[in-house]
Structures are given as structure tokens and as C-alpha cells.
Amino acid sequence: MGATLERLAALAAIAALACAVAVGSPDPGKADHYACHLPNRGWGFDTYEFEDYGRAYGGAIDLAVRGLVVPPPYTLSNGEVIDVSYQGVESGPRAARLPANKANSIPPSLYKAIAWIESDYGNASHSTPYGGVGSILTSIDCGYGIGQITSGMGHMSAPPALDVRVPSARQAIIGTHPVFNIAEGVRILADKWNSAPNMRPIAGNGDPLALEDWYYAVWSYNGFAFSNHPLNPAKDPLRGTVWNCGDPNAPGYGVFNRSDYTYNEVVYGCLRYPPVEKGASYPPPLSDPAAPPPAAGGARFAPGDAAVVAGTGNCLNVRSEPAGPTIVTCLPDGTVLTILGGPAEANGLTWWNVQAGSAAGWSADEFLTKVAKPDPEAPVNPAGRLWPPQVFTMPSLTVPQVAAALTAENFHTCSNLDFSGGCASMDFPTTVPELGVETHADSTPPADPSLAGGFIGNPQIQVIGDRAVSITASTTTATSAAVTVRNTGTWIAPFRVRTSAAWLVVRHPNDPPGRVVDGGVAIGSETDVVVQKTPRIATRGRDSDLQITVDAANLPEGQLTGTVIIEPLLGGGGITTITVQVTRGNTGGGAPGPGFKSVLPGITFEGSN
Image (cartoon, rainbow, N blue to C red; front, side):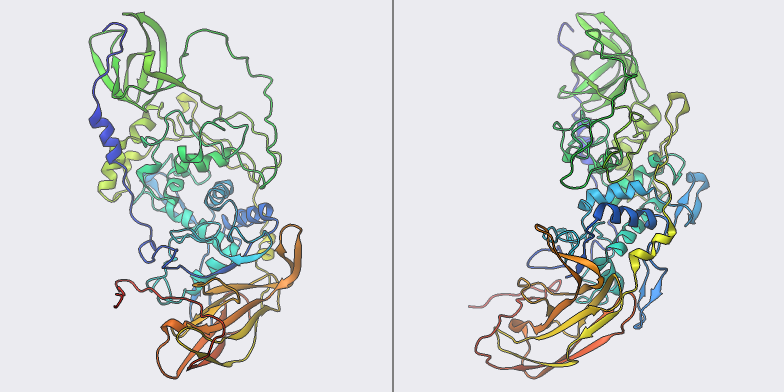
């Protein structure tokens, strides 16, 4: 074999990894909307952005994971039910699963990390100042708000919408009130957990208190796809176990980007290295006086080290003995293995005793790269961070039971069955006493239930304006009528706007073409509302000023009558109905129409000569 390490072709193994890039069952709601960009649109929601966002969003999550932050299910005067209450989570292993229990809470730091990854702790669009009111943060695939809620938010079918032009009350409050958005995100994460064991595998003993046991639920929040599998061949095998979450003192900073990691590794990375408030500096690392200085020289590896196969182009032979003729297996690039012993010199090469899953033997070190393993117990400086740094252990492919579960073949087989049966072959232990592997609980103390009322307040909607208005429109322009929604109570008053016809439009003055208001908020006068960030300018409270007009370009012929309904989603105030009379004629100018065009599925509009 000489000085060149023998490599065997393993293209089939690499191809199997690539072919396993499969998406799990679609989440409910993902098939009932178009993308949220022109020529289509999602819901037009206004929302509030907390000024003290770190404390406020963190405090709301602390309560939401225990089911304490939003009211129990309640019924509006029109009969619609708003329910984003916490349903609890199941517990126990596959063979002894216990029903969902509201006493089982989600680790709060876990959802804080998810919310940071999804939105950088932002509920409103980036143009909205913290402490201000603006359009809700909306992704291209119609994810809304701080939790980027997609499931159940579709706008092209009813349900989940009230109809194809009108959001349900539940959709509207998730899109307008940040605390209800958080509560719905927590519900979704609980649903992902509860989808095991029927549709998802189980990590550990299914203990809701164990951060490690949430591995598959976190994975599923972003879609149970092979792109988030630790063996995804598109990810750099040297990336380490978790992302640095932007902490310049964390391993991998400046070397690896967020896109180099799976969703699980990104979320758990922010669990380990929580961010600081935007614009703030990270604290210096804590020194460890007990840590030994690095050894000078010596062997490349030591027993217990993790290594990864890299650069073979095919695969790396594992032999029964150094330079021996018997090949035990051949490991593809990206395989993580454990150094058991060595080195040994044979046939001009340096050999190491290695183990990958159930296979063990000897490999030459030319294509082995040491993996730096950050100590999960090493302290992280908590100063100034948005939540306490958490200690946990990521699933390691050097543990035989974990490696056997997290194979590409297991995922591929389960995906082909549409995850029916829950992928039992992917269950793995999170406690392995003989290897010192154990679970960890969230260190965040329980939230004070008495704080929940401060997140809801006592909102009271008042609609100011005529209850019967007239609009004149031509084929290009239209007049408008003004109406104001005020909160005479306290805190955030969310409301929904619905119209009786697609040509009848409600918007804000000076809104860009195409935007309509499907729901909004009015802020009580006890609250500062920031209207300019630098220098900070704020007002006491904030009304929502609306403009009733028509889509002039798509207006039917003749005299038309329609209605606009404004209804509170929380608190009091009653439903307001405004009758709109529309006269077609030549306005001779005036303000341009809103330019809104309703796009219906399955209908194509052909141009004419």
C-alpha cells in the first residue's frame, strides 16, 4: 500500500446521503396560502413592538411555556373562538407514553432561543422602532411575528381563514398581539413534541424537563427534513456541535456561519451562548484556572478524542489491524468517529484505533481531522445576556447507540413511510451512565403568575367616525372616508377589519400600493409609543387611523353598497359596522386607488390586443 492511503469508492454511500434530503409531512396551513410577496399578499396586520424587548419577550415566554400568559379559550360575540392556550405536553418513553399534561412545561430558554433564531426577538417589521407600532414581521413564506407562525395562518382557504379574504379571529390576534403570537409559537413547539411517538422519534426518555430530550421537537419546528440532520453532507463536518450564536468568544466564531449548521445546532447554540441586546457588547469569557495548559508537541490524537473523516473523495478504510489485509468497513467523508487508542506505525503510515458506530478497527491518520469538543460544562459568562447560558449535551455520533439511530438510512426509510409509526429506529438515549452522558434541566426559575395580567391589560375599543359613508370612484381613482380606532382602556387593543366585498378596501393613509389592513392595534394612553428611534420621540398611546376606499381598477359597474366591520379581539368595545355607498363616475382626479388586486387560486387573467 506504500505511503499512499488506500481509498475505496463509496459513491453509493454518499449518494444515499444526498438522496435522503427529504422533507417531512407538511405542517397544517402550509398548503393554504400563496407566498407573501407580489403579486400575492398575505394578511395585512399591524402590531406592537415592545421597547424593552429583551425583558418583555423573555418574561412573556417564561409565562407562556407554563400556560399562564394568555386567557383561557374565549368566544367573541360573533361566535368565533380564540384559543391559543397551552395544551401541555406528553411525557415518557415510547413504550410508556403519558398523555399531555399542562403541568409539564417547556424549558423557557429553549423557546427563547427559537424566537431569537426565527426573528431576532422582533415582532414587527424592521422599519418599526422598538416601542412602536407597524406592520407585522412577515417572511416570504408567510411566517408572522416573533415566532414566525406559518401553520394555521393560511389566507387562501376557509378554514383556517374565515373566508379567502378575511382572517379568522384567531389568525388576526396572532398577527396583531405579540403575546398571543408567542403563545401560539409555544403551542406549535408543544405540538411537535406531542407528535411523538406516532409521527416522530423520541430522544431519551421523553422527559420535558431534559433539554436534550427536546432534540426532535426543535428539529421539527423548522420542518423535519434531512437538511437538519447532523449527517447532512452539505454541512461542514468540522463545524462542531453547536453554532456560536454570534458570540465572538464562542468556538467557531469567525470560521463558521449560521448557515453551516443545522437548525437544531443553531437553536441549541443560542441556548448555550445567549445573545446580548442589539448593539451591546458581549461579556469577556470566564477564565478557568483549573484548565491545564495545552501540551506542546506529542501525538495528534489521544484516546477519547473525536475525529472526522475528511478529504478522501471516497471513503476511509478501517482495518482489523494496522496495515492489515482485512477491511472491516469504509467510512465516507463526514463520518465522526472516536479515537480508542494508538498510535501505531506500520507500512510507513501512522495508524489509530478508531470506532464509528458498531464498527471498530485501525485507520491511517492522513484523512483524519481532530474535532474540537467544547466542554459543555465550561462556564459561559452570563453578564448582559438575554437569558442564562444553559448546559446540555448534544447527541454525539461517537456514542454507538446515538450513531446507530442517527443514520441517513434510518431517516430515509422513515421519510419514505411519511413518518408513520414515529421512526422508532431513530430513538436514541440521552443518558448513557457508562460514558458520563446525562441530561440537564433549564436553570431559569419559574415565572411569577401574577405578572401575566400586565401582558394583557384591560383594552376597550372605540371606533370614531360615521357609520354610513359615501365614496365616488372612477376606473382609476376613488375618494375615501376616514375612521379612527381608539383604545379607551389600557395596553394593547387588537382588532380585526373585514369587508363585505373584495373591491372594498381598508388601509392607512399613505400606505404603499397593494397594502390593506386586515387587523391592527390601538394602544392605551398609559403607554409610551415610540414614533422615532433616534432621537427618541414618543407619544402617549396611539390611535389607528384608517381609510375606507375602493379598488377602483376592479370595481363592478353600477351603484354599490358594502359594509366594513371593525371588531375587538380582546377586551371590550363591541362590533362596529360601517355602511359604504359607492357611486361610479368621473372624479376628474383625486387620490389614486390602493392598487389592490385580489388573486384567486386556479384563475389566469389573459391580456387582450
